[in-house]
Image (cartoon, rainbow, N blue to C red; front, side):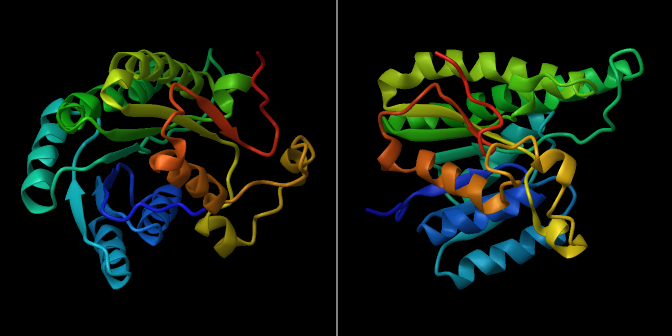
Length: 253
């Protein structure tokens, strides 16, 4: 048994980010063609396109502001024209900001998190899901976070945005399940990425000791779960929130 995405087309928002680029490569390794969304990092997007094409897959780089409905629809039209209609939607992008206490956090940060977590997904769904319904098939994988369940001090804007996202995608899963479309959330912990490897900062003792498995997960751990949920191995799995954080979050029943 293996994860086989041959013949499938995927789109990944935030595809040039630390986690996004690993997801892009992993989808391609499983056989999928990949449309790579970026906001500003065109150079990295084109570099990833070259990597994916070197694997024998099709790829394209597409710019959009995920907080703008008009921008996402424009990207959709360009993706359809130049690349084709995706079967797999990976909503990974999010706005980064400085974490502070509720009393110190600028209200604009709550707005940015709502826009990049909730509205980003609303716009992507409205733009791309109608085709999935037409073909009676689709996979949607959304990036959440362990922070949503832990609600630690200092991360309120992020948690608020991601908890809003959770409600949105659970409703969506119930609305479009009858069309053979699954909708699932992957919730990473503090993940080791290329930047950590370059900085030799993989080990974080204070955090690591809070993880039952004793260490941080990697970007590949997250990408593996994304690819599984994007595949037909997960054809009867929908509406889930799946932590990939070494046991730091264990949802109850």
